[in-house]
Length: 250
Ligand SMILES: CN1CCC[C@H](Cn2ccc3ccc(-c4n[nH]c(N)c4C#N)cc32)C1
Image 1 (tube, rainbow, N blue to C red):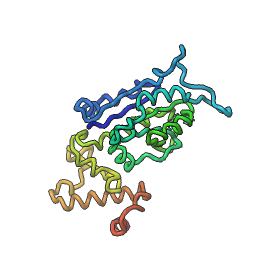
Image 2: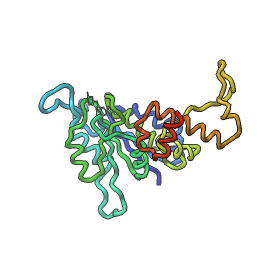
Image 3: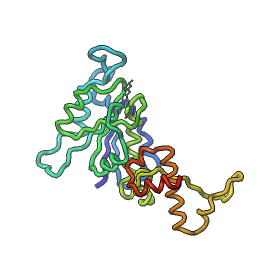
Image 4: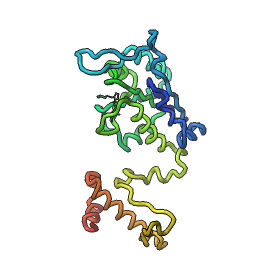
């Protein structure tokens, strides 16, 4: 069955990129289903109000729990008790205060049948929405990085792309999903294509040697070198023999 993704937001147009390019094709091919819902559909006042002042004072506004509650009831109703097999959908709530999104979490989410993304704006969503949802969904408050965005929509685009590319058939060449960065624990090394010489810079000879063992070694060495220089923290997780190779080589 296709992975079902629902996104609730006050800016549905922000999620238009989900209909384009590779992901758009995966939707056309029925590999992924995507629903984008305007949170204001669940307001009842003439101004379609979704926010209010924060209890305890402070800057900005907070998103109202009642509107979110009705939206989540509509988009992911409580699982049917008879449907024992039915797994409760996962509710992903982007927030700078969340657990860090990483490739491991992307792989975890790619195994789920259903994902619902709640895109906050303003100062965030009333905490009771998350607390109440935990009674019937697996709620994950997730951050895509240590910088402050204005809302959850861009974070949702990031996470949906990272998850969808792991769905079999979404990528043209499935091998790359397993061999990409963070799968073998190292950063990607440099890549090259024609022309052989460009603005006086030649492609490394080994890559044109036809010696596949030498090419593989060269690529691993460049990946180790780059990881050592840019992300030494990733090397902590490497097996000792690999680490000693990195130390010896550079
Ligand atoms: C000054 N305030 C501070 C709290 C957050 C307010 C903006 N905002 C409202 C909803 C919301 C959702 C996600 C993110 C976000 N920022 N950085 C990340 N890695 C995120 C992720 N995922 C930011 C958000 C701005």
